Length: 150
Image (cartoon, rainbow, N blue to C red; front, side, top):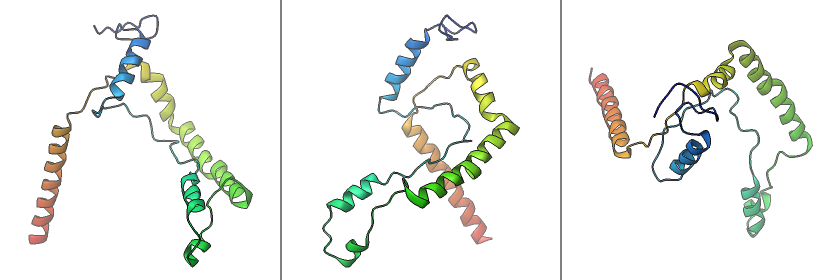
């Protein structure tokens, strides 16, 4: 059942938090899509490119053509480029993230209220979701056609 009082594990719905966590983990392993609550986007960025698969493929290819001979392994893990990238991350990216969070407190608000709003992870009806997007695309196409005709 649902109640507003938290149990000993901090769960607000009466089920121990570990039971809910295991049930949610089980739900994520199914083929169905599920709706998950979103955290604020502030701070989401690609920390470093991952070039290893490309570099491994490059090593395995024969160097029979001039183009193949010109290809060099990619990486930002050392040298001048690494230092420049790290300085840019510190000064521009992290500086912006910290200044924005200090001003807006978006992530702090998210973390402080996450347990107050227990999330239900519900499967998505894929056929219904597909039909919704088909209808949206059809409406957009009709509006564009009407605008061109006018």
